[in-house]
Amino acid sequence: MYEDPNQRQQQYGQQQYGQQPPPYEQQYGQQPPGQQPPPYGQQQYGQQPPPYEQQYGQQPPPYGQQQYGQQQYGQQPQYGQPQLQYAGVGPRFLAILIDTIIIGVVAGILSAIFRNSGLSGGVTGLLTLAYFIVLEATQGATLGKMALGLRVVKTDGSPITWTDSLIRNLLRIIDGLFVYLVGAIFVWTSPLKQRLGDRAAHTVVVKRRA
Image (cartoon, rainbow, N blue to C red; front, side, top):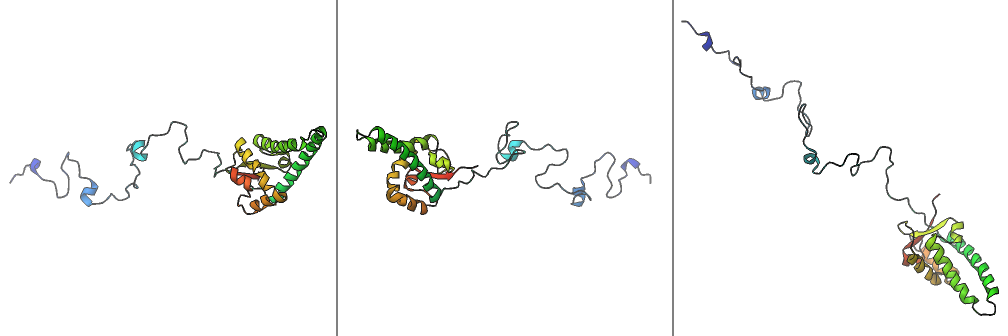
């Protein structure tokens, strides 16, 4: 019997002419040999990456601006401010000794000037208070502290204000009792080596960094 070749079916498992074969995964249930699926989150070849907002949930940073948490090339990482080196009783006592000598010389000159007026004691007291307040508020240190490389700063390392200088030096009257023994006790018992005036004004005496 004559069989029409156009009606002849292909052998089992072969495709018809002009028909695309089914995917390899559909035929065999697995990826083709030698081809592995891309890792999770990695785009396939020829596929456009998702928008920046979809990946990171935010707008892209302006061109040339550093993203948070990234370090610029050639920039050293910063881990906070350098640690302050607090001055102990010894250097501070020597600084007070130098200041006392300077004030004593000035007081001697004033005593000679106001010998007959009876004002030398009051003027010397005001001069002493002004000496500490003005120099520490404007320079961060008296002449004695400058000579020993010391400086008065806030507990966070920032410069002190006029109010801070006024508070810490008014309480110097208490710290200076018994030849600064009271102040020395406060310094010895403080982790930041603060006397009473420093604790009230939130200041510390530190060594200058080279």
